[in-house]
Image (cartoon, rainbow, N blue to C red):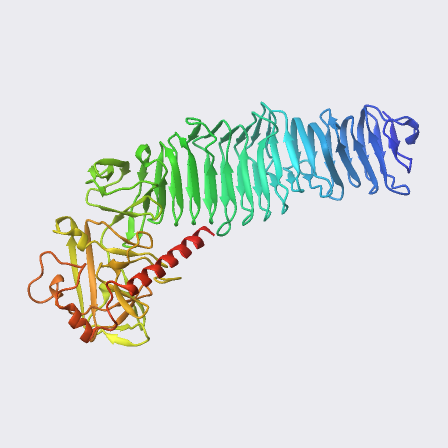
Length: 638
């Protein structure tokens, strides 16, 4: 077991005897030192099958280039470059100790059964790194006492696993960093018929802004099993794809968009995706996860959970089975083809979009309305509906049936007590129907006052309100009336109108606003009853079972700010009997859709602005609102 030093300044072949100080090239058990810097850059090339006990690479201008097969017990690299190129391979259970000052240059090389101490870095810039792993791979820190790190961060870098194996940390988490800011993607790939398992102590992360990463097959039929944590949080302009033949999630997958139109993650396993009870997918901060329809029906099994929060979106474009839980909160959306498990609303701000509402087999939990303007929504995509059948169920669960004429459009199983709840529906603006819970409307509408916005039901006579052009006026009277629309002779005359936030321009109104159909809004110097402006998208009728209306009377007819939108105060045109707290007889069937007889004369004498119910000004107003609706949709998609 000899020790020998490389001595030729011009470099040469590892097998050349004259290159070594002992005049014999190293063999198994020998120590080979490539530590002399000599006079210039030089390569020591392994082109055939060679062996050594220990190889010390420590000259900054030296490169050990392996294009053949090298078997060694230990390769200790403190300086210089270790290159594995072409069909080159390091094998034999080698331990490679790698210092940060050295460079690793894999160009289509292989590590077979290697223990790597230090950072295994695929960071090539001028030439993309490509490395294949066979047998096994154990990555430790440089001291060999704790977990190490794998960096797949060079432009076009690829790390291929062409044997079944498990990666895991020792004494802590093994870090795998994937992705760099480059037009070229980075790859982690699994060989044909092989299974790569990321152990419980593995943390795989994509964090580089503008990066694009793929976890897929080298060719076909690879399987990825994640028992650790995979995090995709690279922000805007980034993307990630998990696309092996099979993907099994036993651990955690985190996706964080970072900002509007941030990163998206697509899971498009070709044959099957399954998530165990221990598995979890988490979306936050405008994140998006798409599950591709390339997975065959019955081969997507979702147990465990998917958590969607902070305006994130799940696109589940497959028929999924399992008994897992999809949770929706903080203005997030789940777009689901079909799922036999449970969807849970957590905070009355979520949206569940059903691609196939007529055949949906899942269960919905927690559907609620937090306030009259804050509620969970079930969107029946591309499905028209005309009515909602009376809720059928107990205090524990039941069935919500949505009708389209005499046909059933959707049947949704709800868990919870909805016996005394009121459901309503409205167009989703794209050919479908939104279903949501309501309690009462108009109550909760905020009116501008000199001290801030105040809920309309909290206003009292003599309270000051702010008028639209900066003035102040005292409240004279607040009329109110609760209406059971189901018992009304003509419910279409009392159903409320919802003005969506931004319907009249940015932040106008700044929240969804509920008005009676005859309540006039101020636009282009005229007042128009809001019911005349319904377009089915940004301004729409709400078909509800009950509604509570409030109207505010001032010393004279004036303009108020309701949720930031300029609307009229109440003008007595002979309809005070519509209100429950008015003196005299209360009208049995109040009419909030038309003005009383003689209104034109009263309006001309006392109205704050001209009243328009037809003609060119109404048409112009409708065109203006439609333009705002189109602009609003473009902003939402941008």
